[in-house]
Length: 324
Image (cartoon, rainbow, N blue to C red):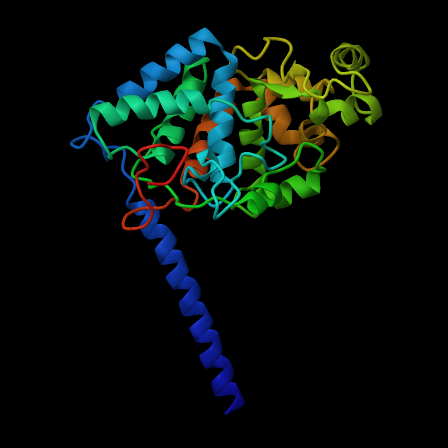
């Protein structure tokens, strides 16, 4: 009798797991690269034009839009929860530690959404806009292009606590980074590829101060130049390029070459090349930009499809900052 009960319970647990996997797979299966072909055929062109304009005006905006998408997908999945302002019912994600006074590009998303609402009211989701804008930002700065499958819906809530918990912090060591990405289903190789997004953009002094004043695995001239930007006390908001070689204006593989030369800006960056399990991956990408582009594109496709909301769940917000 005990044995029968054991196998019955095991069967039920396995069946439930399969059910959950099927639900997840169904959501992803509903995404399609032609989702707006009939309902809003100019949607992708509108997004691309707005992104190109924004990035041409300020190249750093490309990194900001890419980061918005990453910070969205790692919290509750790719549901545009990161765009929601606080309400009486929940505290949004914008003021969580990884995002507060750090995330930007909301105005670009607002502009895209406004134009799409004029063109196709209530059709294109904010979550899809984030996914396409991230791709177009990378491409505008010379990076790879990939197919974005569409059909995500927008969430009606956000999670301040999950944003603080799920987003990898800049002071993590390698084992903690591996765990943080593994919790979202990413391999070490995918983690290292996605980290290459730091070939563009900037970081605030408060995010890298501890590295440039306390880490020993740092090249001396690079350390001195960053200390000139970021004082030991104060100046928390002062900015430095992740890749000072190209001032963050070009999406390339120099990020990995910098790591090999101990010029990673964040502690978490340099942890990828610090005598650990990911050293060889960093060296591969430092040598071969084509390999990096290929693996980055694949990892971005996977990230953009992290537990998306699809019909009948969620909604298409008419204002990305608030629920309908």
